[in-house]
Length: 409
Image (cartoon, helix red, strand yellow):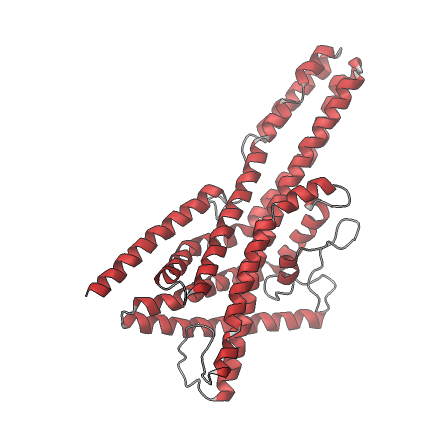
C-alpha cells in the first residue's frame, strides 16, 4: 500500500517540503498511488472505515462530556472540551468529503505536479519566489506540531502520576478504568490526534501550494509574453509584425485557458472543504482565545493553537488575495502588448484587424479575477480571514461577559 508519489512531467520525483512529506503519510487525506494493488486498496478502505468508526466513538464521548458540563453550567470546563470537539467534527466532515472524491484528488494532483508546479530545475528564480511565500505556512505547521506533541506527552505524565486520563475531555458510556479497555482507548486518542493534526497543517499547506504555484504560473505567462513582444519589436519585420503578435497571443491564450481550467478544477476540489474549514474557524478561535485568556500559564496549548490558527487564516487569505490580484491584471497584460506600435509599423490591414479582435477577446476572457471560494458563499481572501477574526472576537467578548456574570452570582 503506497501513497501517491508526486512527479514532474518527465517522471522525476518532486521533493516535497516537510509538512507535505508528513501529510503524505496520512492515510485518510492523501490518495493512494495508481500502482497500488487490489489488496492494498482493500486494506486502505478497511483503515478508512476503522478511522471513521473511531471518529464516531470520540464524537460521542466528547459530546457526552460537553453535555455534562453544560448541564452543570460550568463554562470553563465546557470550553476546555470545545476546541477538540470542534476540530473533530470538522475533521469528520472533511474526511467524508475527501474519501468520496479520493480518485479525483489523485488525478488532480497528477495534473498539478506535471503541468502547474514550477520546476526548480527550469525556473529556479520563480521557484524561490513562490516557495518563499510558503515559509509562514511551514511555521504554522511547526506550531501545530508543538500542539499535538504536548497532547501526546500526556500519556507519559498519566503513567508517572498513576492516573488514567485521556488526551481529550471525554466521558464514555461504559467503565473505561480497566487497563484492557483504557489502553486501546488511549491508543485511539493518539491515532485520532496524529490524523487530525496532520490534516490541520497538511491540507492547508497543500492548498496554499496549489494556489501559489498557480499564481506563479500566471506570472511566468506574463513574463514570457513580455519577452516575446520585445523580440518582435526589436526584429521589426513590418509585413509580419501583426501576424507574429497574433500568433504569440493565441499561444499565450491557450496556456491562459489551461491555467483557468486548472483553477476551476481547484475550486471544484476544495470549495466544500474550504467552506467547512472557514465555517468552524470562528467558533474554534473563540474557544481557544477564551481558554488562553482565562489562564494563560495552564492553557498554553490553547494559546499556541490559537496563534497557529490565526496565522493560518491570514496567510491563506493573503495567498488567495495575491492570486486574485494576478488574475485581475491579466486583462491589462493583454492590453499592454504594445499593439499600437505593432499597428503603426505593420503593413497588413487584414492582420491588423484580426489582431485587434483577438486582443479584445483576450481582455474579455480575463475580465474577472479568480478566487477560490467556499461554496460560492465567500472568497478565500485576506478580507475573509479578517472577518472571521472579528466574528471570533465578538463571540469572545460575549463569553467573557457570561463568565463575569457567573462570578458575580
